[in-house]
Length: 250
Length: 250
DNA sequence: CGATTCCTTGACTGACCTCAAGTGCCGTGG
DNA sequence: CCACGGCACTTGAGGTCAGTCAAGGAATCG
Image (cartoon, rainbow over all chains, first blue to last red; front, side, top):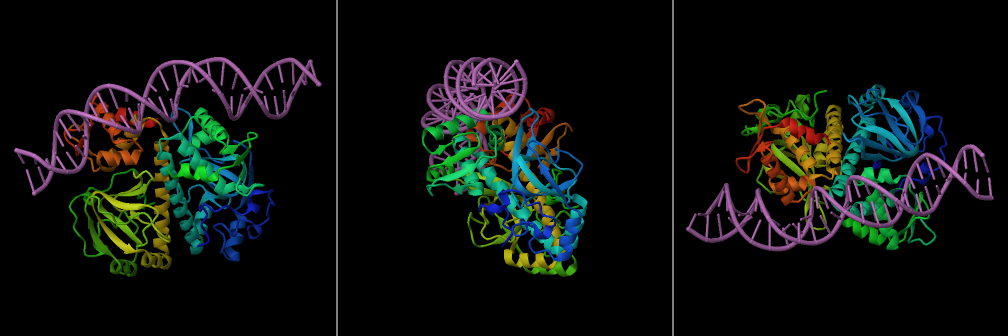
């Protein structure tokens, strides 16, 4: 089972550093973790021809909610968020896509959700209809896509469980544990976990269904309790992973 | 696009009445709305041979969280819920399956969620490994399964948006609107919508991430405001659908 | 007609939201 | 070099709303 795209295992570090800007899908570092893993030369060539590499700057959306310009995007570097906006104007993040994951809605009509990077991101986009055709043509791609969708479904349901919690401390703990598993690196003291936080406070709030103030207060509390340390906005050190995991349990 | 299994359109009324207990998949009333819609005779025959019809009584689980007895189930009548239990012992419902929908995890290891009926339900079960094999064999089935998974993903994300709301009144409104769209029938006054509520208060609470008391209070409030009427536990009449939809907007 | 289960209602507490002010960081420009 | 402004984040005070605990009512079944 290769295509555990949404498992909690960290992605290869190479996928998070400077973009080698591959000239073809064949050389893409995503290939081993993603949909295209076992595609043959023909399919890979077709994929290549319909591909557009894009560099998304912070806040620059790839698609709007209800957009008809239908594109699929393979995340190559960074994190991409799926958002649903509420009538009050604030946004709820309903999904995240990490390197190797596909965002967008194959075989759909319009995109039900907005797609934008968290920070900056690099993606390869494919016209939806072309990708759909390719999927119907190569059953292996179709199967990979199915596994990917099922994994995302599991992930979404795990998030639902976390969101349903009423306590902010629990949500924050779940979030930090997930981030540590995704993009954390061991620090000098191997018990510590260091991570570059790609999310703003507002984005964390949107993700967890909290206000920015509550997020800030919870992080301050964890800082006070020596569970985490944050020298600045972007860097976060987790001292007491066990305590976090415990809070995240329930 | 036939297999819009999770669209909000109501299902054919026939799927909700007394079970004709079909003797073969060929005669199954689900066939037109479900995965097996366009399968050929061979595939249908194979499906038939691995099929077990089951009648689930209230609370009788089809699978436990972490269960290794892997089955897939096609819902024929009633509603089936997917639950994740928290360390505190209460359950969060992370998904619902209506007639025509498949529950369980194809190509997975263990079931990550508990599966049980809401009230009573009739399902057809299939051994997972056999179903997997059939899926790999018939690309049309695989494709249908993919569409089904993508629809469920959209549904899960819409639920996440609703769950993220902090206000109980909003959650209840979203829930009632969803129920009305799913299983509601026009009443004597066509503006009214009548429905048989399959969920207990506890189940509504589990679904929305609320307590049973809050659910009860919110329904009492709506009753007081003449938005709904509930002569008893099981019957619900929605007088003011517009007000509900408005509350559900945000 | 109990007994059980499910639902409703009440009083209270506490957590999170709201509104508002304050702090630190960073780039710009004097 | 410092002054300034903008921005994101932090902190504070107060109110609201959902959770908790507890009691009472209604339906269902023997």
